[in-house]
Image (tube, rainbow, N blue to C red; front, side, top):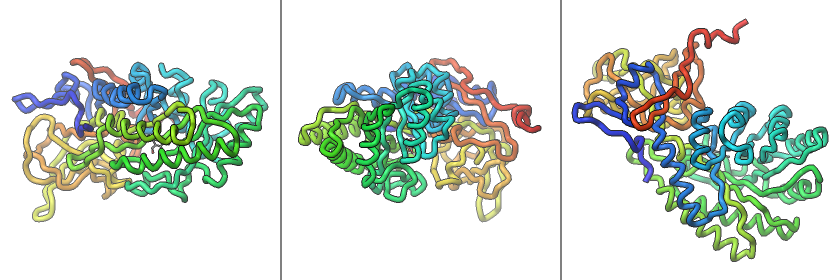
Length: 428
Ligand SMILES: Cc1ncc(COP(=O)(O)O)c(C=O)c1O
């Protein structure tokens, strides 16, 4: 069962919250705020929530963490220890992955507009590439000819499934910018199969993100196996790899009700095996690309309360020392989070949590029940492991916060806090 909070989180009788064996207020004092905190035990537990049932139900698998959710060398080294690979979507993410302990044969390169330079970097390290469109395929072929190398390719397909999630995080439908139309699939695959410097490994389909329903994934299995049958009859090949993307949802607030990962995996793999058997196909390697369900609830953000500003009869603001620059998701797509004071237990009256940035919309949440917040209190926001640091900016020339990992009463800096000199580093 997905939890909103890290699995090691507890509150002492004195009212203090601790995670990974360390008081959150102590972390705030030691490293300053805003601060991203990563509970390493939760991250590992989430990795195992995938690998354990897959080992049992479909041993020919590879889990690649969707690095876009939030990657740095420390995070990647941890997931590498858990046997995961990583899916990257840019030269910067690929470079980070290559500098980490993740083995290059477990890296997958995605993206709908990969530059020649990015493709070149991937080819130089024999990274598998997920092809998004025909132009990209031509670029890969040209570069392979220049470099006298072979590219290992999967083809990203639009599965044309509507999944019930926010529009901005829906990617599998027909007008999505991602992937190849099913009507072009056979031509694209035939081209790869007929081109000596290209190797066809398999197909990829991703239906969206933050989905709580298993049914769209089961539809995806049926649709993708249908394509495998078609590919075999039209092109004469059986795929080695079938990638079903990422996206099982997580619990950001208590009312969210995503399926447990092991149940999701069991249903997915049971149907996949049945469908493959019915179609007379061999079992390809199953690749899954979970992002937020690996790292979301492993992360939390700490802020210090700088002021409480009542607007009589309307609302009471709590101002924190971060906001939209370290967590743009509430502004981008009305994402909801769970909040708690790290140094005071209980619920009181509703407050509006506003950031410090020069935008009226810089509000993290409305109606958060807090027990009389006051200046200097430490506010914890749960579930910020995914798409927070990864989407953070230097808006208003702020310095991006540090990220610390916690485990067994120890903490370590995974990414240091930026300084004012970092902020002007590229000014000429
Ligand atoms: C292709 C692909 N794979 C994996 C993911 C990860 O999704 P999530 O973080 O919801 O698991 C995404 C996110 O949108 C994606 O586009």
